[in-house]
Length: 122
Image (cartoon, rainbow, N blue to C red; front, top):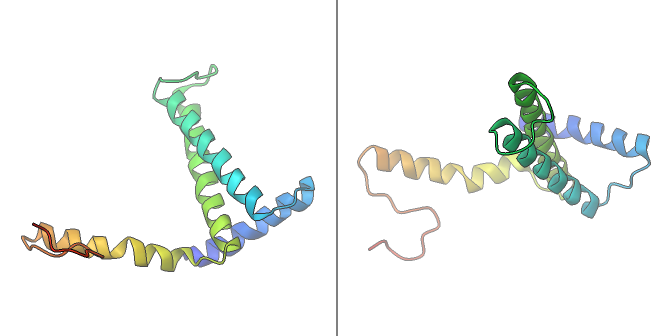
C-alpha cells in the first residue's frame, strides 16, 4: 500500500475515534496525541530493554507493546501531516532522498557535495 493510501485510511480511523469519543481533533490535539504516542513508545522501549518497569509482562508481550507503539506513532505522524496539508511521501522524498544519493556516491568513492550545502567543504 502506498503512503498516501495509508494516510487516507488512518485519517478515517482517527476521525472515527474522534466521533466515538467526542474528541475535537484540532491541530493542537493531533500534535499532542502524537507527543503522547512518542512518550508511550519510549516507555515501551525502556520496558523491553530492561530500563523501565515491565509490569509483569513477558519479553514477547513487551515486544508486542513496542510494535504497537511504533504503529501508533507512525499513524499519528501521518494523521498530523495530512491534517496540516503535508504530502508525507513528497516531504520524505525532498528531505531524505537527496542524502541517499549523497551517501551512495560517497560509498562509491566519490566526493559529492552534501545536499543543500551553501559553502564548499574544507
